[in-house]
Length: 529
Image (tube, rainbow, N blue to C red):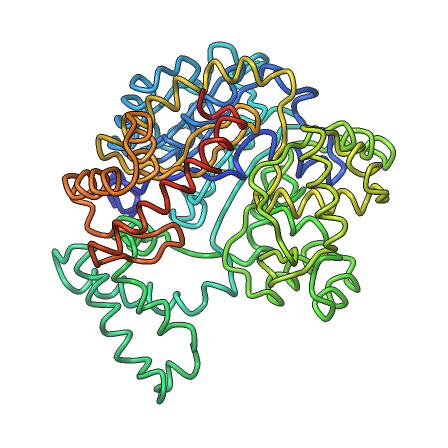
């Protein structure tokens, strides 16, 4: 096995951002579970380590959002690190470092993990980070590399710090395990077969094996969701498919197995960064009854995953728990500031979660949003008082509204320093988008998190600033996308638009929506000046 340890290294990965990795999001989840977060207040200096940082865009957004933080991204693929370093320079970030390193090497010698302003280090010189993250890496690498990843995370995390680890889990991935096996055999037996060719051939063969939807074959009867997954494969980003399925170490894990492996490194499971999962009483009644009847935490989590057919987890682990009693927890959560994000009127407050769809009290949700509309940013305690809600109910409602991006965590006094960092950063990101970079987020200094922003919106914004409108603006956007080679043009709902006239009509509507609601919201959130 070569330097890549069986990981797919022939191409770089997709570029993305994940809100659950933001420090204030992780702190909120920790507080809900009664743990004192690594930072006592917003604006306090901290250090953040991203193990397997990929192309680096997500970490760059965090560095812009939190100028008081120091960020280190580690990846062993040279393409990823070269891109991250270039991107940080282009975006004008001085509080971020990208390091090309192998987890096995860092396990033997962790000394490269020494941010200049990281604060405390151990006598052996290992940096002590407030936050360590590993998004989408733990179940994509061979087991020795996985053990090294966990060892490095445990050694780098300061006492009381938070380790975010997202990973593929069973039973949700059981159907696609069959697909992965076929891809693996195709690649092994077809000497020199490129991963993309093997993926295409395997998906076509798998479709034939599952049979037609109206008359499925034995495999289709046993794995009824497999056909839909195979039909989606040609439309998926091929870089994603290669990185997902063309790794020798690809192996989803049941939650108990993952938690036991991390506990062997003294990393204790604390919370989920998928916020609705913080509350057992939000589960559907039959699943809730089974889960609540079990006392053992590993068995409870296993029951939860089996009952919801869980395929992906965003777990938070802690290196030494700092317990808060109920009063301290309510006080800390009550002080948190919340702000309106994007909250168009709703007849029913229905939320999509990993365990199904749930409906919350209209009066409670609408009452909180009305208070934020009238008064501006409010503390959670103020929202509970103004809506006459008990603290625990208020915490649950806030959690659901945060999960749906209808409200956001507000950074209070730390916003001003973040605004000075984020606005030039966002201007540079928009420039890159207009040059054809596949980026889809801007940084909000008020939220301490990113908001979605597409290339089409960037073109429309530029046109509106230049005084264009109507059909002229739409034609210019259409021509700009064609010049970039954007073959797939979608509307705001993600529907593919092939007819040129339909494209122009959609662009005009998007421009009107952007002008009336989108841009005012982005300015209110400090994204744009």
